[in-house]
View 1: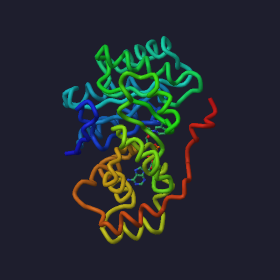
View 2: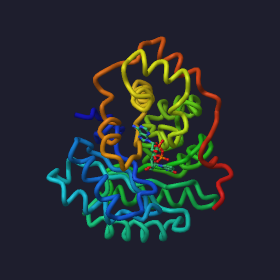
View 3: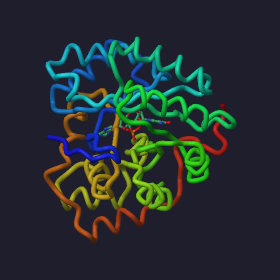
Length: 272
Ligand code: NAD
């Protein structure tokens, strides 16, 4: 069973979910999602951009898991930002998903001049109970401060790139102070940190894979993760991180790997 984090409004969000970016082949996507739900995943992270919201809904219907036990996240894409545009984009997402509500809706990237209005629309969807949690993605502290200035209800989740080489300590501390849960996207650094020597050494000490060590490090740092895989054995392996622990020393070794290295875009100069 995957443990959950209690968000600011009391909603329980699983600490680990399946990320489904680049699962564009419908059959492959569907198979991966159904497999994940079968082995115990209870959260799926999609986005309008990923072009697989239809498969997310289909996987939920194909599984025998009740809708209310599954935590679905989706995001409004950059070209749909602004107040009215976001409301319309949400309607489209909901239709594709074939669901009555979404658990978490996020501004995908802080589009200059639009992200505050985008969030205000997300807030309205929350008031209308069409989403259970309002949130954002790729927001630096300065973006969050601009959102706070106009929001009645602050975002409850911020999903950002976070992996051993980009530990985001300052942002995590800020989010903690404001009761915003942090989700790591590319929690495995898109697979590029899996051969790190320090992580490999820790994995050998524990008899675990490097992917499991990294996901466990996130969890012990109170960070939610959404690793992506379409390989059944890896989907299963990635959720088996709740029955072992990194020692204080191993956590410290992991924390020291940070070098502020991004594999994805910086939200300040994202090419819209
Ligand atoms: P990731 O860090 O999850 O790495 C995924 C890659 O790691 C896979 O393609 C696979 O090659 C490898 N992998 C996974 N499990 C493994 C295992 N057990 N052993 C060996 N290799 C393994 O990278 P990601 O897909 O970029 O990020 C995960 C999710 O985050 C996405 O699917 C998406 O849902 C989300 N995301 C969000 C944003 C955003 O802007 N909000 C951006 C990127 C990704």
